Length: 297
Length: 283
Image (cartoon, rainbow over all chains, first blue to last red; front, top):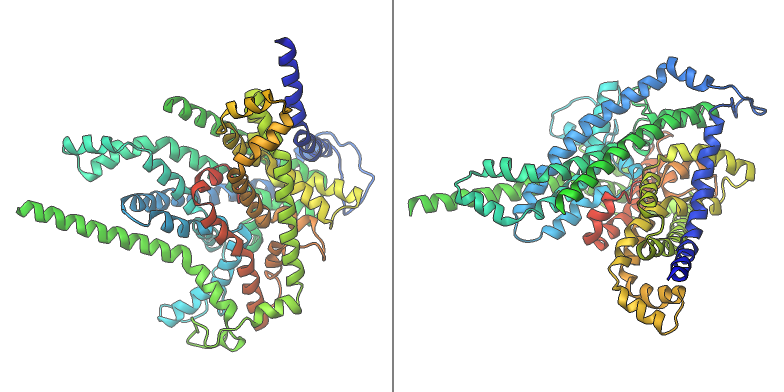
């Protein structure tokens, strides 16, 4: 018995070790190395040798306005984005849940934006928003709603609105498909019972649908928050952080620090703050999904 | 009777509004694709006219041709295909045994699965900085192999996660029968489990392919002139003056960049909820 247990344990390691080796070599080791770098002043623009500077990089962060601004910018983008995605996604999911035929086909069509890369999504919209010859300006000129070519990215507010809109186009269907799955798992007899009791459509939504969908919504929102904290490609192609740094998100300003200013050590320190932020969100996500599983079981 | 017909009328109006809402959603989500496709098919003369041309008068593939012959479009398209396919295969190769180990031996317990979850949400920007430094020291930036390895590793947590479910669905009795007949565990995995989970493998493979195809951050930092991927090519059109050929080539490159997404959206229909929720696709 013991012998069998030991051999199965050996087998378990045998099967898992190739992937574990890669993860250690390409994720764990580099992360430890970059943590070490945060205590150095490694700067590719100046060049080696670098030396130990203690907590200097972390101290610099406290007074770095660009760092604080980048977190503020990220929050400013995250909250309207996830709110719009939730409302629109829920709305479309409710509509799709009502139709008798063609649900799968229409869902596949609607999900396509979520399958393209942030880079492609941003480029499509960058061209649509284009000052001259862009589809939006052209259409508005044609119907006479506008008489000058409008620059949609000219000021910070409009640039942020444009990013939120593209993000909404890109990922609302993720919310939609998750919520639709949630809606379909609600037992129909609950609604029938509600109808017998004379509940209106609105009451059924408020007292049956929403409470049963609550956890699905929270989980989906957390996934979007984790992804949006890391938003990069969309920013890179749509605004490149401009105008005047107003759309520099945390990942993007870390990228600029590391690969434009070449301040590798400082960028590593900045990236560790993102790691901690995402780590916290992931823990919350895990707690919530555990809780949901427990409740369903 | 009267209330009944009133009820029916209400229902019908409700259905009409439902379909109208879905139609609006379809237009909003799909119009940009239609626009970018028609833009890529337009002749140069169509870009600068007013009123604007929405449907190209003489659709042509001239921009695609130019992209492939004058620019490096063909090279970067091939790069993306090769990098995505090889990372996909490598990710399968490494994650099947790991998933098997977790599904059958409960390898690492819940601690290990939490660890995988953390890896899956790991910000790429935190990883790319040390990887860039290390790759520079090893001289493997601008190298296919370095990028493929990185994609493989980055995809393993997701692939393992998804695969565990597929392996658990295989009845253990079949394997035990094989073991009694004298198969080793490895043989049981290769000859018994693997053939059964082929559909699952295809799902994981397609997700792996599209995720790698879509990836941008690693690609923009770790590739050079010869190793760029389609996404880096698309991004290159954000700088430069918007002349006519520029507009045409930019839109053609975007169209080529999103073609795989269309296939995957339809091929993976049933698995999209699970896959997207677990964080496939996003680069």
